[in-house]
Length: 121
Image (cartoon, rainbow, N blue to C red; front, side, top):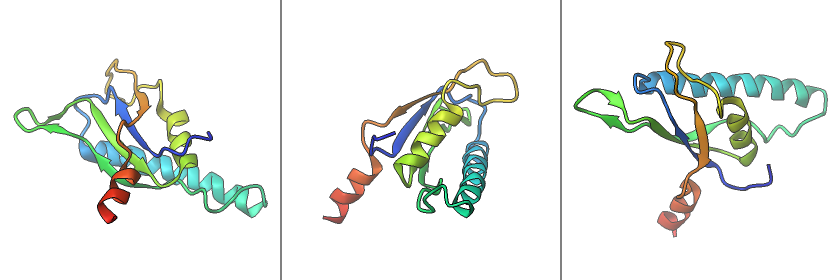
């Protein structure tokens, strides 16, 4: 969990997953994690700055078929949120419709934060 990277590539996204499906999955994950965090903060057990949030999302689509290409990029706002997302969905099936694809999360080769620093310099 000591890794400062925050941009991940989610591989093996079921091709029938839409942008809305993926955003719903990410929003639900963040909401659940933030509810757990709020309880821990109230008990004095956690840092309120460790909220699970994302600020960048990209799911490439094949415009000919209307299906996604099987991968997505997400940038979370802090390394703790990144770690929690990895624990939550890495090695699991994302599709309730029966896809056999097993989700795999890896750090993206290019980190969104690095790109923003370069652009702003």
